Amino acid sequence: MPGKGNLAPARVQGVFGKSVFVPKTPPLPNGGGYVWADTISAFGSVGLLVQGFDRFDGVWNKNGLQRVEIRVNGQPFYRHVVDDVPFPEGTRAVNQHMDYEWRFMQGRQFEKLFVDDGNDLTMYTTGPEKGRLRVEDGKIYAVEILLADSYGNATPLRFVLRGKQPVYYKTRSALVKKPALRYDISRNLLVAVAADPDTAATSGPLMLFKGNRRLTLRPSYTVLSQNTYLYDLRAGLPDSMQFGGITKRFDRQALIPSGRDFAFTTGNLQLGFAPQTLFDTLFVLTSYKAGIWTVQQPRTPLYHSLSLTLRPETEVVDKTRTAIYSVTAQGGRAYVGGKWEGNSITAPIKAFGQFKLLTDTIPPSARLLRKGPAGVVFKVGDDLSGLASYKLEVNGQFHLLRFEHKNATLFSERSDTLGPPLRGPAILHLRDQAGNEKAINVVL
Image 1 (cartoon, rainbow, N blue to C red):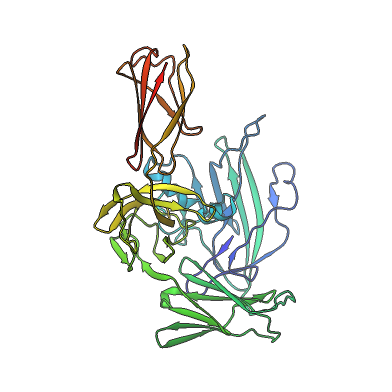
Image 2: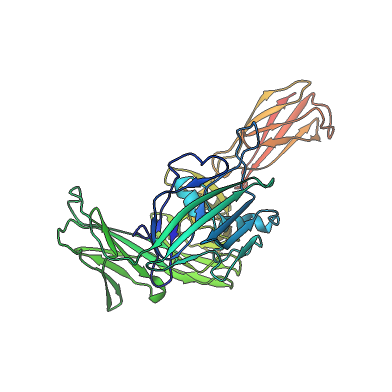
């Protein structure tokens, strides 16, 4: 259940962000479903999410929910029916129906029970709030979520929300010994958290700076000596923030509108947004350090591809074999590609993240694992960019091979009749994404 409002951020159980509630007891008998017994306090415009699954009789594999409905105080409020997701355009749109960020960060898959901005799937029935429940101070909201499969079997989940106007509160932790400051951006909100050892009844302010202008923010709440400050970025993009003696400057950022062409440029990169690149308006953050370009965070989904142009600090010697790769903190590398123009390289990307220029000069490799009447199997590998093409010639004639990505093997099947018999001298031609080639001679 996320709390997200407009200029006044919503709260669930007094805090901004997602709160997860797992029923403590098994479902009630005779189809009574699940009940969360405790009243949940909330305020503002909140959206509900659910994690659920369905099983066929006698099997353990999990299936998705076909239909979800919400009633609030006995009245219909929201409904979606997953009868048909258009292919292929709808497959990426599903990223906006699911909580993409939560899945990326936590590995858990929640369905949104509201229609998020940029979601153009047609499976919803809602009112003007599009499934967002506006919770007012002092009011009670009896909520029933009905989870159903395609055979009409349904399980209800019931709970009660109580509207409660947020007020500042503070709890302390003796473990916090010195100040610290960090921040995140949630859609249009800057969420800054300051570790604050001060014992005063009300914690100190956070200062935001834009040029010679200054804005003073009071904490929204303090939990275990961690102050949370909320600021709507639509009021202006700050250059830096300060808490006590700690100053943090923001990475290069901009507000990117959705639904139209837009270019964002710094000294070392350019981002080209098309009308369908984004689901919704985005506050993009970019940075460059030690040969690595950081573009937003991979937890933010893209609808369609984004054009990424990188400008390295020094001239690249071998441009024909140098390309863009996505990289991870754990050392993972994945080929992206790119086309050089002068000292800039441009490629489409399907996800945000970190990128680096790498040069691949080592050709692919292969070894013969098996040969005989059943066919041939080659184990193949590549140092960096990955295999791009392959061709087997037996006695100078082409013979069909198949590629299995999971175990990196090339193999033939008995049913493949394209090509000569697998007997005699043969040459396996390999080419990687960087253009490195290798020919391997074998006798079959």
